[in-house]
Image (cartoon, rainbow, N blue to C red; front, side):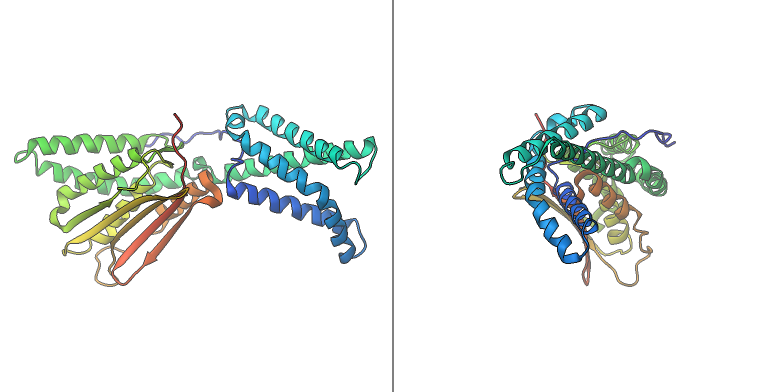
Length: 338
């Protein structure tokens, strides 16, 4: 039985080192500044000129605030959400006032100007944090967990029954092998039933993937050949849990089971600079397969979780060739902390 869905969603500050977060802050702030400039002038050209003039003060404050918040990211994420919001607003207000003061010879102004600067920085920061809070809730796994459980309710019985049948066939002839298979099966379902919201080490995910495919190999035998290319895999990379297993399950279900001919599932994991790449390839049959096409539910859930954890820095790409189907995940390399 699936555990009941949680009723509360924990709020978290945005990852200020994330490229997607930075781009959203830059674009939204400058767009707002442009709209304000256009609204305060009588013509489009005059609005553009005012925006350019305002940007001389806006951009240094914005970039310096983002740089400082990025440096303090780890410390900020450890704070309670309310305290984190207060600290972020304080930082942006102080940075904006400091930049305004340093440019006072070029842009003189009295106390009212500094008060307006502080108020603008505070309100803008509060609004952006509110946006990221709502966005985090919209993408939260808690909101998609009901859909994920519906998917798992369909997949798990299919996998469980096939696995138990395979184990039963081994109990008399190879009891030790059957015992190991049952232990692997218990490990997999223990992970399935966990909440699985935080990032986990890639080495652990690979171990679960091997356990899953090892169980499938009991019943598929020589019909399934596995190719592992993990020589350049960074085992300490942190990834969302259960990212690989649904993809491998699709590879078995759609690439191996529909044909009696042997098929190859290839898993290639490597690091390139600051990116982690996970590539899974399986046979593809345009016609004659016994299984209908998937409903894209697993892919959609994986994309949502990638956006939640990594925003624009991660993506999932699928490629359909003449005789193969390939899924390629690109994630930022995040090493496990000591």
